Length: 489
Image (tube, rainbow, N blue to C red; front, side, top):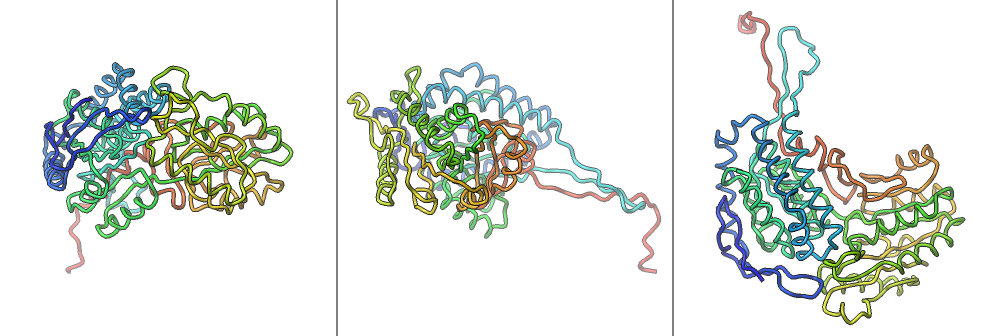
């Protein structure tokens, strides 16, 4: 067990808030303790950030000089992949195979936005007036409040910090209360890379205290949040009151669709990965499965076979597919949804309980679960469970399918399994989601924008949209006519 400090405007110090801990979900042991930040810490961090981003030593850097810091951070991450992966596994319980991937994703994100800030250009709009030339350029917003979730810390944090810094801003980062370790480690890496003091602070603590104070601070010029829809809606209200931009990546209840011509094995394995990897603790998890009735039974049989073969255990051990859920409290929430599904008429085909293995008794494990017999209007099909629970529904008619798939307050992602790409593309256009995967699932590219429709969020992360989201556009007019204005004649 370690005792950690917060990172406040370039210095490591004790927070002025309550004591908090990072707990290993696999057995309940304490990874580290620290004192959380409080509102005083927020005010100090924001004041330092405001001063730092306006300082000519940062603001005056040409893009390749800012990019150099991000390249150094990427190199440092790449040199420490195993150590960082183990740290993230201890923090949130994801298996090492997944956390290694997330660490490498963070390194790639830093590299991408280093390159993006070097090639980002303004525009020379088409001229409609021979007497003037117009230019459009992009400038930083100022102090950014970045609030991140517990399910993919280092990747989520880098997706906010890297583009915000590349654009010339300063960032105050509030990691999820349950998972402070990776954000603090990231601060250490940026410090080693030579980031000037004040441009990054990391303030662990309760969202209701730190997140609220950050969002409401008058010097914060943008809120970037990933997490639950209710919290996102609250932050959007604050942003609206302040008339500042916000990026919100929120919940999901993603439909996965299997058409009658799909490759059954490819679909079954992709569906299994899409819902059960990360123990279902992903906003994009393919939790609603719509299967054409002609394939329904054989696909369901194969899915149950694959699910029965998944290995559940200590996430630090090789070969484990599912680690624990983030906490016992969250596991109880998942179990309550499974009980609700049964009350609504659902039949649990596999899973539906905690594992019986006594070696897993101290952890917050839950078996991967498949349920059938529900209608799409059931609460279990409409509300985000954020756990390893798949609901399977047959369909006959494609128009009925589209209506049901879109019948959700969410619109984050969807998957389609079919050999017919023309049909798949036509179907994808009708799905009200920000991302559609065809014959794959949970595949990502840092250069491709990501975000949701409806109550799954606002704005986009990744891609060039991801850096422009942390900038504001300015128009310049240059007179080409040396003649005085005759209006006052």
